Image (cartoon, rainbow, N blue to C red; front, side):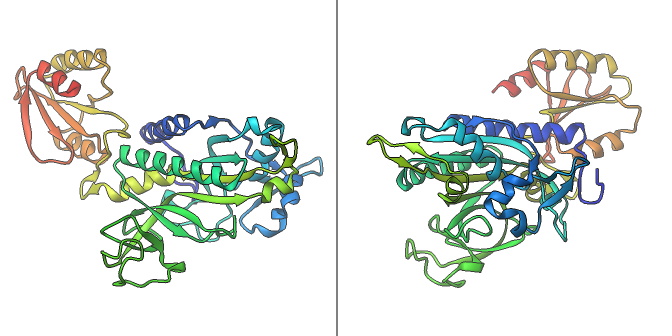
Length: 376
């Protein structure tokens, strides 16, 4: 539901968002990330300390009745670095990776494309701290693999794309791009290997031989950014005077990395990539429900029995028992995009009609066959 570029996530949308969050949490935890929850309301002092209070033009700024000034967090480097300062004392405390899944606020002049670019949006942002550049690059490779595993789980193919550091860093950064006509970026990529670059900084052009494998010719595609990695160096360590004691007793400042993933944007990209003229086709891993059970007139008792069996077996079932026409129920089931539709009616008798959302084929199954199919 829309309120001028900010959104309400209704029950089914929230279920999808929660499943995206769960996939991300699983992968971040697996590589040693520790989840935290940081405030959205940031003191001006923190942003002033990095020089960003006056240089970041998308920052929402607020005046308190007490005369103090705050910002709504558009990123959390200014908050996580002082936190890490309290946690890092020795080289033995490194590497450290802290992440959260939280809302961000940016005063976009032209918010557009629904939840792909809004003024309020949710992100998973992780920040890592390292003894040296080598360790940061080692960890980056772990994060990269974790991101690609997570995208695979939600049926998205993301290309790791070289890009500029934007407002975060003068160093090269990496973006995770999903090919979609609804995207905002143009990329050049090689069909024969992993090479991919944002067209804005590319030294190559379409049709050039791939500089990495020398086999494929570069293709152009429209893409949407769903994640990114920034090498922040020691900028924030210096701004907040973060030191750790090295093995030889000397004081060093940790190298810092930032790893973003737009959770709400990912939800929008999935819809752009996976739909037809009838509505959404959710991947099973993030669908609000596994099954939508449609009961037609005269089959209410059978539907109740099947619903009880399915839920007892642990299946997520949305039961459409509304007093509506079959056509209305079928159209709504297609619209919301649940992977499997089950229909019970006087016509199906003691059987159940099974239909995958992405297919027009149906089959009649017994309740036991339905349960077996779900567990296979």
